[in-house]
Amino acid sequence: MAGMAAFNLSSASSIFTRPAPSSTIFPLSLSSQPSVLPMRGLPGKPRFQKIYALSSNDIKVGTNIEVDGAPWRILEFLHVKPGKGAAFVRTKMRNYVTGNTVEKTFRAGVSINEADVFKETKQFTYKDGSQFVFMDLNTYEEVRLNAKDVGDKMKYLKEGMDCIVLFWNGKVIDFELPITVKLTVVDVDPGLKGDTTQGGSKPATLDTGAVVNVPLFVNIGDEILVDSRTGQYMSRA
Image (cartoon, rainbow, N blue to C red; front, side, top):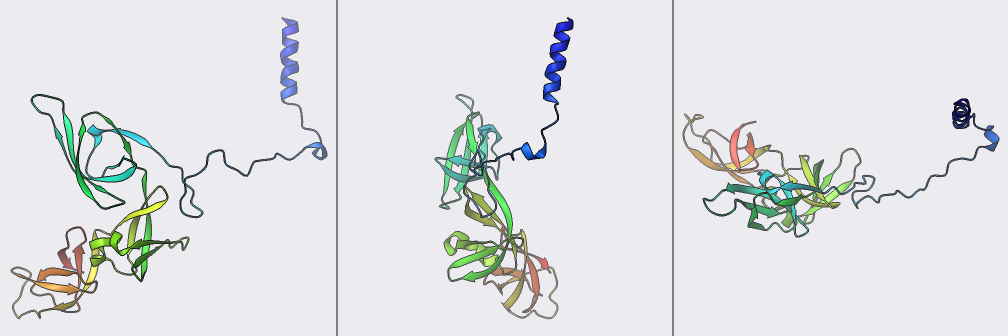
């Protein structure tokens, strides 16, 4: 036992021995190459692609999934359990890249890859020809979307508006407007005496070109709040 104790003490002392003088210590050399390569993304913001599996039973509106190598967003879903046969999930989903909308059915309980879609806040700063330019106000990096990718959202998009830009595999695939946007009425029939907040409505043209039905009391120059999802008038700003 004594011999064993002496061996342990000797081993411990070799571990905790003071380092040699600084003149004999060599600097630790670290490789400049990471052991895992980040996915291609924005400059200065390396990311690693994350792939998660989820069950078709977890599908809900807004779920991002990857099918046939492309990212899709679930727009509608319905879990069906027939009297005979296996249960399934009927969905309506939109391709982020192409904009196509399709209906697809998944067997209940099957494994589906979740698309690694991440979001960043950017400000819409200006339009450059047919491109819409969004800027990160912290880094001043710009990302661009073509007019066809912006689509009908341009009717409610105004310079200086903060939006949510969506990325997948290091590429911009979509953006989200604020739910409530403040816009200015530039053309509308004048309000009539006696008009109140109750009653009829009339079409009004806004400073972005959108046409929205507004109450009869709204006049040119008024600022109003509009739901960007439905295009409906909400209230005066």
